[in-house]
Image 1 (cartoon, one colour):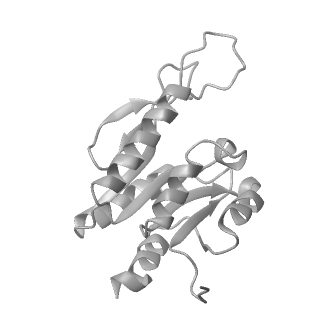
Image 2 (cartoon, rainbow, N blue to C red):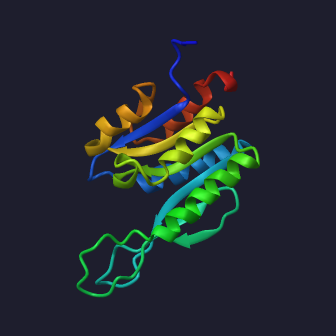
Length: 175
């Protein structure tokens, strides 16, 4: 069966100079204020020291729990700071939100992990195939991988809260 309507999966396309986290957080708060049952995870940057401005944590939108996303690899390390245990924790959070009936799933980013076939890619697909809309942020450099992942059936949004809210309100289930 085919449809002319895109899947309810949207990407906020951003440039390296865009600060996308506050946009996603503000949109999530607005939708929660409307009574939308949210699931998924969003990133918060938490500078831990002046010399380490890259601390990150994730917030489970369904429970409010926050957990570290980055790991301390020591001074001088140039390796990826993404904590694989945190990624697994995030996957469990998304799956749990789907089991509890989330109406909309936020995923902080479709980034390098997802572009390479891992990360929260399976959870995004699980949500969409379960009929739950997904919104995420995609850096311009991963736009080709995003289009491949979605088969082109995606809404591409500017990094603006109003665009996210309009996308949500225009979904068929919201009319």
